[in-house]
Image (cartoon, rainbow, N blue to C red; front, side, top):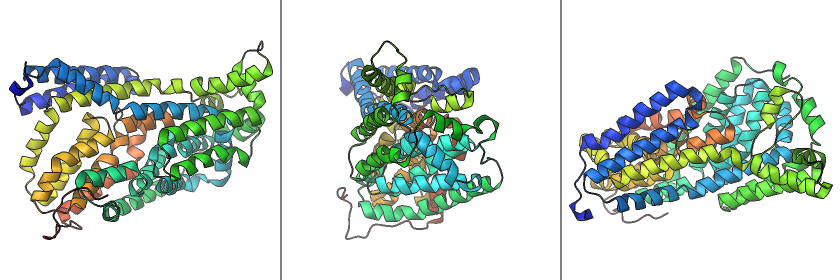
Length: 491
């Protein structure tokens, strides 16, 4: 059937795939609990995408067009997929090389349980601000801080919330961040005007988050001796590895490359390979044990062990089950389930967009958004919803910006209002959706389920609410000057 005969979907048709997905995801959580993301959610997303495709076919679309959108939608996840694989390799080799164990030991010595959570948040915020990447911070410092938390008998879920809160604050406010550049480009605002305008929502949000983490830390929990399970952690790590500050060089190299705006995938892959080299040089006995093949010559065993860490991660055998579970992580293979989830989510989002269902829902929202406050609220809600439907923060930012930009211009609102709302609703909430690329990445990298850390990602939860309050209060809502119509992105 020709695409010219395509009918516009009704609002009910647009809602049907979403209603099905909501019911299916709820059923998956009920049946499988924390294991829902290991297959059940993927099936739900694929079936919901299939329903969206049926709606498109019902309205006269050709399957060839839908299939092409499927290919294009999944292709958007190719770079995140390779970054995930590189992070898996990096975790494996950085444990094998002693980089992560060194960070854990020094972290346990320097970070007291009473201020561990706010310190973790602040450290991640500063580093993310410097390098502009929440993913890099979570994949390096975040992994180590989770280990420190377990060593101090602290909560991994709260620690993950602190890591994500700090990482996304720094990412959002850094001119080096990709999303911080994409949002003003989508809205038509200038980069540094956009960053300055975000201070009014981001500043109070990070202060609230730090206060919350401080209150939790001062409320008790955590022990300097690591508790019963991790009481021997320093001794066991010292016995397993030859530790020292020189083992932090791979992390320093990654941070320097990130600050110089080197692409994320090669940066992390270089860090992983450098970790493998450091493992062979400084932990040869550990590498040989990981190879596990006594028939190999020592050079071949060293090659095999380092290679194994890249694809299969590190396997610890310290005699302490809790410590073994902490250290036995990483490898590209550990990210395959996360990649499966991302591919299925991107397929669902592509079908929803191609069938016109997303645009149909947003038009209905715009009809009800009569005031400036309600327009910004609609923008925030759409960006959050796009994170859940399109399953990617870039799609959430660009799609929402594209659909709302004409309305902001028509109402005489400065584009920085839109770009700020895109970040407050799109960038910040992306790690809170389990099947979003960011949510899946954070869960897979930090080893904490999205729904477990979600209640403690205070910055990410508070920022959209602060933006909502300011919108309805009319505070710092800028208007276009008559002499400055919006034309094209200037950043």
